[in-house]
Amino acid sequence: MKEKITIMLIDDNRIDLFIHNEFIKQMNIADTILEYSIASEALTFLEQNNESQWPDLILLDIHMPVMNGFDFLEKYSTLLLSNRQKCHIIIVSSSLDVGDKLRAKESEYVLELLEKPLNTEKLKKLLVENKIISIG
Picture (tube, rainbow, N blue to C red):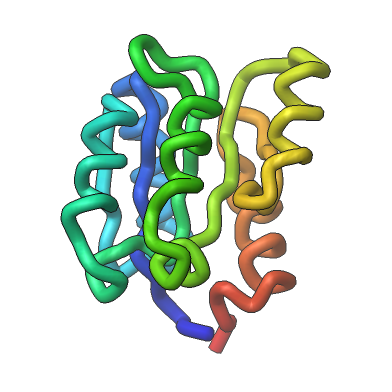
């Protein structure tokens, strides 16, 4: 468990990327924030890097063009297991669709689905409860 982690943001909406980046900076929980507006580019990063460069946490949007969040999760499941064991995924979405929520809960890789805009208290509580960060 760490005090500061590496976080990857994947969202096609530049405003949401900016807002979530600012929230994470204010929370002071990340030493590195990786931003991707195209899910396939984030996946390429994960494919091309070893565990030491992988993020500890991915905040993933569902509804994106070309490769949506669920497509990303499908491809993610084929990546090296030792890398995936280090990384946690939280879906951050404005979707109120019950089907999306159920599908997110069914994924073994998704820790939780949080609604946009990101609630920093909920996020911090979730990260502490799952021993991803420590508050020290």
